[in-house]
Image 1 (cartoon, one colour):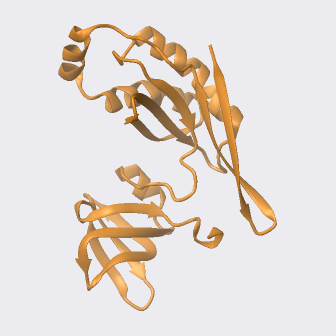
Image 2 (cartoon, rainbow, N blue to C red; image 1 turned 30 degrees about the vertical axis):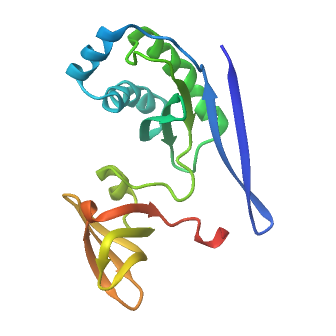
Length: 196
């Protein structure tokens, strides 16, 4: 088994803020064409991985932020993003990835080759799921809308509330703006504004 550790630091004033990803276990050949048919019947890959990862995250005191199964070039990547109060460290990624790699080997939920990575959602993380919005109420967010709202598409403001894929933000000099998640290109936590 191969392990690769990537450590990147972003300079913030005179301090360095670590941002990292832990990549483990890498390429695995799985099954045959019939496995793809079975996979479609039982649900999508991301949701199946989320169901497998959630109990382990709870056991380790971690928050499962996101699961992505995406293709870059010719390679598929299974990326699991974890978090906890106070932020995660490389040991948290390792403590999750070792037992979860064994779960993936036993359950065999993906029928093709892929690279398995575990990491922090980092600064400027995407808010996609209801629990992301719920835990970020009161924090600053950055939003880009698909079509202009009040003649603008880019907003930075404080997330006031979230319910049923609609949310409100408080924007300086504009007041409260209500938006639908489906009208947004992205919604991100704006915790990296002072870095750039």
